[in-house]
Length: 248
Image 1 (cartoon, helix red, strand yellow):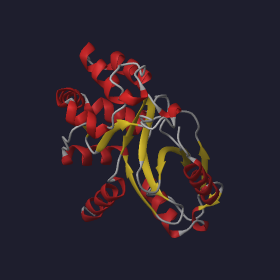
Image 2: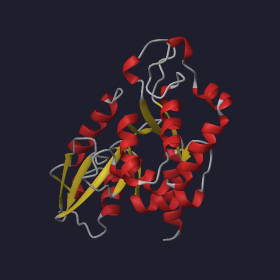
Image 3: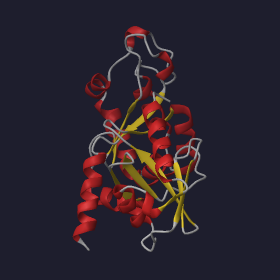
């Protein structure tokens, strides 16, 4: 969903920079990264890299010394980390966590934003997120409490498994082939827990929103879709790196 052309090109660039290359052939940024995921790599070792498709969170599979590493890849600002239709999200919640009917209705009400739970309301009744928060604070508080109670499970889906939980993500790489930041999944989870962000409609440092309520009647195809953003992604990865480096 959305315009992912820049992200797809970045994946291609990283594959080109890494695949079938000897460690000594890749640039210093990628050498630092490969050494991070495989600390006993030598100059003559060959690196293999390929894209992974589908709706899992794994974008790249890297092989070093016959060991596979699966990575989620991000770049730029804004950093939408997850999108899916509200209906599949609700189905997932029903299958994995305790959820009342009222929470289901509140989530649908918030995402559709037209006063209904199925998107059938009038265009003139569509509200922005801030308008919904101001008019229906009790719904927002209930959703926030639900997220807080289930944030470990939600964080896993939004960052590490995706809709297709079939390829485990070992870590995240942010940036390009020439400059990047990276962290293991466990490092990210530990950092999120240490922050203990309990802001409204948040799952740790991820913010929950509707992809687009099409208030002006355009982008109708984007309605009814949940979106998670990690606005502080680069800053948080930098903090993880500094903490890691400080322990050396």
